[in-house]
Length: 98
Image 1: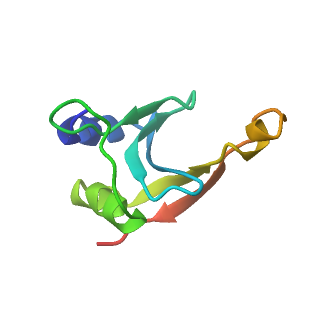
Image 2: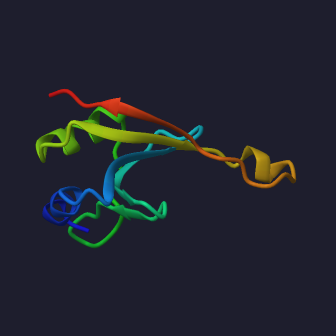
């Protein structure tokens, strides 16, 4: 989705702004999450999921469209790697500041 589509989606109270990270990775994704935990991620002009190199860079995208709060989610493959069922991602709500 493009930035204007993300902005429109986040006006709906059925969606929450989200910054996704994967443990041991230096890339962050920005988008929206619905009540069923589906992600709708920001894409570049070629339709590829846009990646950011820092949390602050990801936050700035959301701040630029007027978002003040986002869920920050970190996922890991550790449990899957050792044969356990997938664990819940770590998630926290963060306040965004310009």
